[in-house]
Image 1 (cartoon, rainbow, N blue to C red):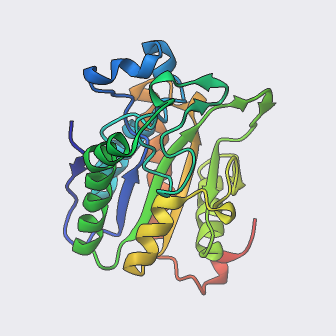
Image 2: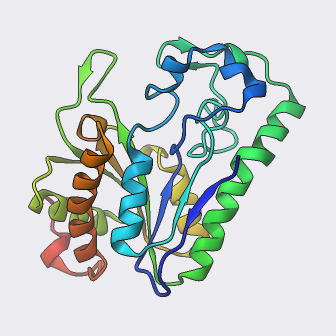
Length: 248
C-alpha cells in the first residue's frame, strides 16, 4: 500500500495533494473494529476527493500526491501532536482499533502511511519551483445536525488575496462559495498545505467540495472541469492584483 503520485508536465502551475484520498485499511488491522460501511463514510476518507484530484491533475497537467490509506489509520492532514492524528473517536463513532496505540504501533503507522506521503509532496514541490500548492478535500452536506448549504469552501491563512481570488473564480463558474468553511485555515486546520507551503516558500490553499456534488465519477469529472476553469485563471493571478483579490 503506497502513496500514489501522478505525473504532471514540466513547469506545472500547480501541485495537487489529497490527504484523505483512500478508505483502504490493510487486512491486519481488521478494519479497526468498524464495519466497512462505516469506513466508507466520511469518517474514513473524503468521498469523491480522489476522483476530483485525479481529474484536475489530468486537466491541469499538474503533479498530484494522493494518500494510500484511511484517515482513521493516520490522518495526513494533522500535526504529529494533534489528538486526531490516530483518532479514538470520529464524529461520534468509536474506533476500537485506535483505543490503545502504543509507541511502537504509532511509529510503525507513521513510517508506513504518513511519512512517505509527506515525502512525496516535498519531492513534487521540489520539482516545480513556481507551482501553487492546492490541497483537495470534500465535506459532508451536514454534520451534527447542522446544514452546510454551500458548494465549495476555500480555506486559507496567509494568502487571503489569493483565496478571495479563487473564491471569485469559483463563483464565476457557478459554485456557492464560503471562505474558511466548513473548517478554518485560521484555526490551523490546513496542516498539510501550510506545512509544505511554508517549508518550500510557496503559496498554498485548501479547497473543500460538498460531497453531495460527487456522487459518481461522472459527477466528479463534471465538477473538476469547473474547478479547473477557476484555478487556471488563478495561476495568472498576482497577489497584488485588485481585479481578483477584492473580497467577495
